[in-house]
Image (tube, rainbow, N blue to C red; front, side, top):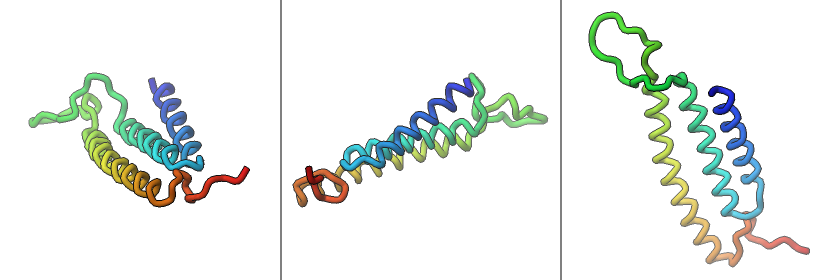
Amino acid sequence: MEMVLSAAIGVLAASGIWLLMRPRTFQVIVGLCLLSYAVNLFIFSMGRITMGAPPIMPKGGFINPAAYADPLPQALVLTAIVISFATTALFLVVLIASRGLTGTDHVDGQEREP
C-alpha cells in the first residue's frame, strides 16, 4: 500500500511539474492542480496509513494512539482542497481575461515563431 501511494504521489508531482513548464496557460493550470493533488496525498499519508481506524479518540483513561488515525492531516487536506478549488477558479477567470486581452493563451502572451 505504501509503495502504491508513493508511486502515485511521484507520478502526480512529476506530471504536474512537467505541465507547469508548458507554454499554454490551461496546461499550467492543470499542472498546478496535479501538483496540489500530490501535495494533498503527501500530507494525508503523513498521518499514518490506517485502514478503518476512527480519527477521534474517546474520553477516558489510557488510550492506545496507534488504534486511531491522526485527524490533523485530514483537516489540513480538507482545507487545502477548498483553497485549491477557489484558486483554480481564480486562475480560470484570469486565463479568460488574459485570452480576451491578448488573443492568445500562451503564458508570455505571444505565439511562437515558426
